[in-house]
Amino acid sequence: MLLDRLIAFFTSLKLTVVCLALAMVLVFIGTLAQVDMGLYKVQAEFFRSFFIFWGPQGAGWKIPVFPGGYLIGGVLLINLIAAHFARFGLGKDKIGTLLTHGGLVLLLLGQLATDMLSVESGMRLREGQTKNYSESGRLTELAVVDVSDPRTEKVVAIPDSLLAARKTISHPELPFAIYVKRFLPNSSLSDRPEAGFEKSPATQDAGSRVWLREEPKVTKMDVRDVPAAVIELRTPAGSLGTWLVSELINQPQSVTLDDRTWQLALRLRRYYKPFALQLLKFSHDKYPGSDIPRNFSSRVRVLRADTGEDREVLIKMNSPLRYGGETFYQAGYDENDPRLTILQVVRNPGWLTPYVACALVGVGLVIQFMSHLIEFLSKRRTA
Image 1 (cartoon, rainbow, N blue to C red):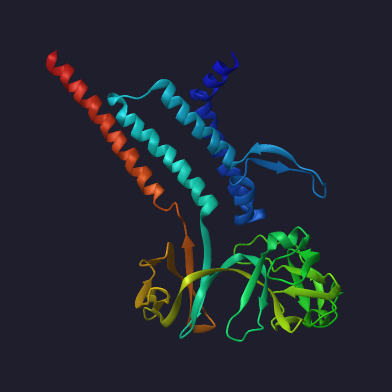
Image 2 (cartoon, rainbow, N blue to C red):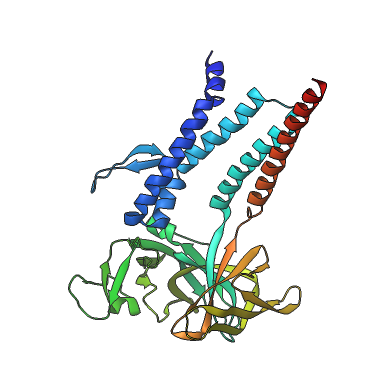
């Protein structure tokens, strides 16, 4: 029967060996691919996917050529659960095996949760500065900020994935629709005509006075893409004009409609928080005559208006701040500004699962070993 064949397939030890072998090959080819593709692209295409696709350069099609990390991990997870119930079952004498396999299952599920739910960002703070948001290291967003009221700002943030889709974007808070006429994943701007640059197609504000060039996507870890987009704002009455938005345009660009003013900015994606951090003192002292850090720390002030919390915390290299479901690490500094610190902000809801999983596996192995040891000693005493 088909059901019996499926059960035999998913409980097979051969399937376990094949999955582990494929995982080793995937890690090997993924490591080699980082040279040309970079870490983040390899993670997305090799490990956070069900298949690895390949196609000739310049072709508009690709075919799956190798299983991705999600497929290998998913099959291995099904194989582990099915094999346990088919071979071991449940019972008091199977507690050790159950805990060991349960720990392995939790380890796989925890890694999946980390891949899908964790968020890494950064916070750059200068002494005396206060921020209630961190910024992505690579992802961007189009921020449309209503600055009509000087006391508050209303922000509509549009992720770059929607801009790349080149569709008309509307939002209840905006009296106009945003039509993406062109999106450049990586770009350069110039304030004068240069070889390889084209005049900006924008008709409004600072973006209309620059020259634009599309650049190939970068793969290096210490360099990132700088996207740009040409957008048109449309209302039922007609077009308001065309803007070029880019991180490289430093001055604010604005649009006014019905006595209200909005500012347009393409910026790093922000993650706002219900609290704020103020940098009181940044220290980066070295041992005399060397580059070895002696004191690499940031003294910050945690401010939370809804609870009235106001306290000081020292963040050091091996002593992060854990607060609000996030962890703030002392990550770096700006060589050109000795008063500026760089904090890495990590939100990982599944951070505890590896510890619990390893504990379950350890306890399970000890129980399994002790049960066999006691049985062996009992038989030896009887003999």
